[in-house]
Image 1 (cartoon, helix red, strand yellow):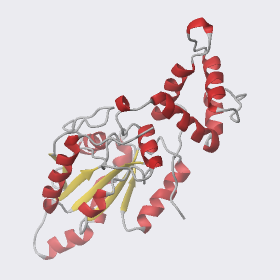
Image 2 (cartoon, rainbow, N blue to C red):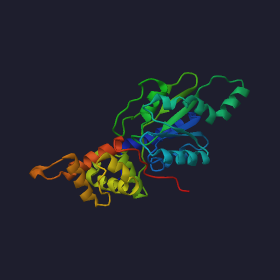
Image 3 (cartoon, one colour):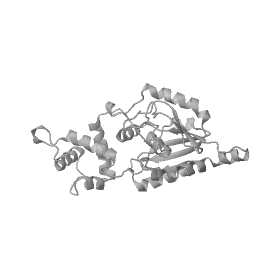
Image 4 (cartoon, rainbow, N blue to C red):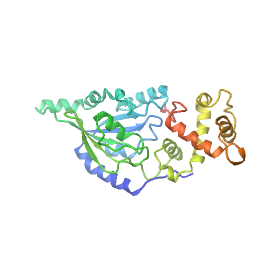
Length: 283
């Protein structure tokens, strides 16, 4: 299955970001903590050259906590400030102001030496679709100025949000890149909801997701569906058994494998099946 998705507005969005970057002190990159590398737009590193950097590992309540710690260490070793957050929970963002001040300490000290005080840090918020950028901004600002939604591509235009005297945030639309060189990256982004479902075969995608969960997190499947679930079965057999357990039937009283596959995808994405990570940092 092809996973490419690059609508025209993304080209314009990237061009606007390239124009705005000269105004920016700090680039904040919001990633999905379940797949931090795959959810990084490779264009951002080039765009953000010479700027302070902060990685936000968002949706950390949905990802494997042990793997979250590995990613935090990985990005810190590569020179990024890192925040591990659940943007829907304001408590996880209580250190945000302090973190951006730490990341931009050199700038703040330089301003102080020059007699410049209380000039807010100008930060650009970047991220691919559906990583929770708008929810993140709404939570840190205590407002609802940035639109939110459960579909990729809700934010279409750049907008500034003030955090008082500490920072001003430039929200930008979620942008992908024109071609995924590695097909597994596209699969992971599709699984996480960063590619429009309308162009995907969700049933086919569910087989890839189920195959991953069987290999990496079989205990989560058993906990969600049945302790007796045999995760060594083929994907078809396993979906059939899951449909039997849930009493999901099609015409003729047969287990409805297609509907079960869609339910499985919904529950996996929403965290109902449990916390998982699709990738780990390379050692």
